[in-house]
Length: 67
Image 1 (cartoon, rainbow, N blue to C red):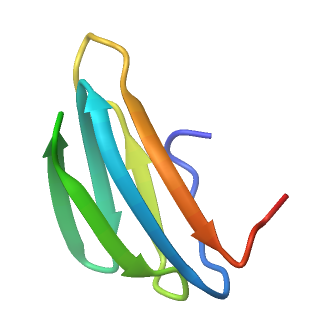
Image 2 (spheres, rainbow, N blue to C red):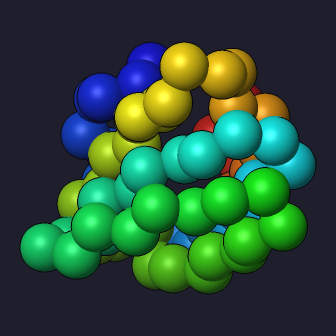
């Protein structure tokens, strides 16, 4: 869920569709807006949150799949 710290094998790609997504990757913080994308190695600790009042919608692609 939001605020949980993740670390796993593989890579991740996210594209924000709506709202603002705050993403921590290692020691860096990124505020992503609608239209922004990010790609990073999943082996780096990361977590996310919604810092705004509106819902966040994002397309998230993981490799290898975790489901």
